[in-house]
Structure formats: C-alpha cells, structure tokens
Length: 222
Image (cartoon, rainbow, N blue to C red; front, side, top):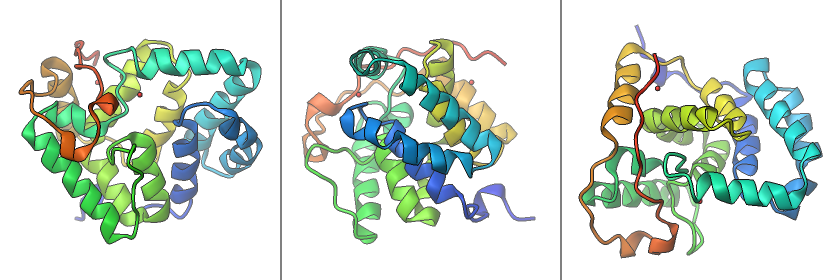
C-alpha cells in the first residue's frame, strides 16, 4: 500500500495554496483589492478547503483595514505561540534550523524561485506560494512540516483568531493525520522546539526571526 504522503496533490490544490498564501500576508491594500478574486477561487474549491476561506473573507469584508493590520501584528508578531516560520517549530534557533532554511532555499532555487532579501524561505505564505507553482515539491514541504502547521492551527483556534480559518483550509488540503503524525504534534506541543541559540545571519536578518515559542498542552494538537 502506498503511503498517503506519496499521493499527488489534487488538481485544485495549487489554486487553494495560492489563495491561502495571499490571505496569510500582511493585510494591506493590495490584499484587500484581491478579495473578490480570492472569493471566486474559494467558491470552486471543495467545501472543507473553500468554506474556511469564505469565512475569513467575510471577516475581511466587515473589518476596518486599520483593525486588520493591528490584529495581524498582534497575532503573528506578538503571540509567541503563533509563528508563521515553519522550521522554528521543529528546530528552534539551532544549527539544525539553519541547515533546514538552507535546504529550503536550495529547493526553491532548483525550481527557479529566488527570494527577496527580506524573505525567509520557511514563512508559511512563501511555502504556500511555492506549492502553488510547484505542487509536488511544495506539498512535500508542507507534509514535512505538518506538525508545526497543526500546532499553529490549534494555537490560532485557541486564540479565537480569524486566521485560524486559513490554517483550517491549509490542513484540509493535506492527508488526514496518521497516528505517528498526531504523536509528533503532541510531542512538539509538550516540549517546544530546541533551545540552543546560534547566529543565523547567513539565512536572514534577525528581525524576521520569531520570538521563542511557549508550548501549551495538547487537547485530545510575523
């Protein structure tokens, strides 16, 4: 029997990943101008994927832009549990994280994607954008960081954040968690990432590194 992570992404998955990538970016005027287009995409997706995106778009439509910006910063820059940098969940600020960032950059470069100087390759919006263009390689990256994704999803849900709907949609594009994956999420929540501190200057300015993660027990996982 083939493992679930060996299956190819559904034909609709790249469209979903592109929409999710846009919605996880800072909510500036450019994003707000794209909401109608994103809504059209969401309407064509399977309900477990498109439904949460539609709910989030409804939130965008009824919330003042200045409040959206404040909420985004408060959620992703000031909440230690809500980190959009995926390698941080597995590696913390350790040498292993530096290696993981380098490998991700090499994966992008092999596909012809060059990041801007102010972008780290493990930001979830960047990973999703890559997956939208390179579905097989991008899906593999998402699966490799599934524990961190699920932990972020639950942290946002616990915080009653509207962005939890976007993470619900991301999770719905991936196979159902298997037992060993659930265990990885539970261990990560209980232990948090490694704590060894190292310089990561070759991989990005420290201003883009998230604050230390403070884990909370699993209920049942900027």
